[in-house]
Image 1 (tube, rainbow, N blue to C red):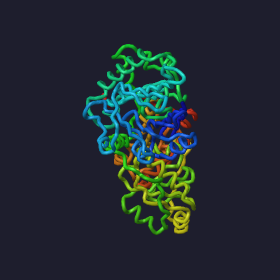
Image 2 (image 1 turned 90 degrees about the vertical axis):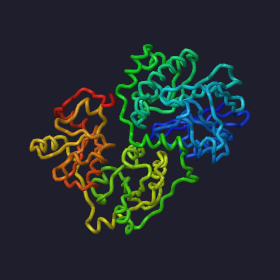
Image 3 (image 1 turned 135 degrees about the horizontal axis):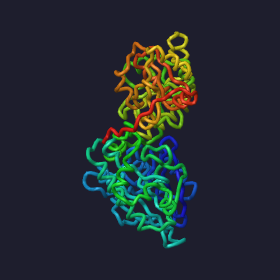
Image 4 (image 1 turned 120 degrees about the vertical axis):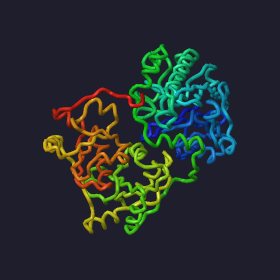
Length: 482
């Protein structure tokens, strides 16, 4: 048996290829939207992808199962669990094979047994893998968003992201039952191959180690140490991170059927003359240069989301799935724009209409139309706050804010800033704050794009503020969802 793990850093998302080297068959579980790495890996190992499946209807990225099955001619296998409200709407049209608890998928001499594990989502399944030439006993489980290293899949997303009221306590109870059944049924040696790692918003305490064992998780995972249902429900719902705004759209699109791309995104290079039309159209024009470069000179009306490991997660907060997008890259070749477009496609943002390069920035500079925003040191912000003229907006998550923030700061998480921008006075100076200065720089660019004149970013964020010995206020964590 061959097992290969693929990991997308920006999404903290893992997918897996399992192949039988004797027969040359392979299955891919939970692929993202770029089929090329899976196809290349199969070819390199003398395998052909004969099956494609996924553990559940994902909320944090657009599934690539349809795309990969179309490209390879593989059989598409989808969960039929969860009841009538949680069926894949495109399954019949795509000729998908429906999976139920107890089904077995045979990949040559490798068995994948389907186990229904509701809680994170009603239709969630996992795949217990047995390499029959080696042993009749199960080797590991592709656990999706059911069981992570150090954590479990959050059961509140249907309510908090998809706005299905009254579901999170029932889902938490269901997750408790699924976990209890699973740990009693399977041996401690069972390896855990989860669908996410540290940094994912699908849990609150995911470990950075790529895999574990069931026995170790029983010792170290908080969720498996709790044996009381009510205690588990209370703990699993407490302190979950704010779900990004794009999660609701991902759930809808993955259920109805992700669009087939057919090829890698390749937006065209546009001349400087097209920029004004792009800005006037209401499209999102995103400057993907590094924060420091952007702050020194940018085109008014653009926002800055640097093309870094966090690009796709920040973009999901600020760009609607159906919104038209343009890039400003400052480069002379298309590599950066293509990389940015590929990242956006991972969360279903496909309307990338073009990119502007160094020629556009050069022309704006020659006309003297580039804008800037300031980066303040903690001591400079402390001095500015003594006048009561400066507004401070903290764009961190609720748990970060509650652990310590600048006295008098207004708390607006980054993903809420655009719709709550009316809470700030554009005639007064504004300083954006986050943990280290990255999210707040994006916020500063958004404020500038929305007409705020005197905007600054706190260099080093709350960490630098506290390290400088400046005072912070603290408040108890309040769960606004009840």
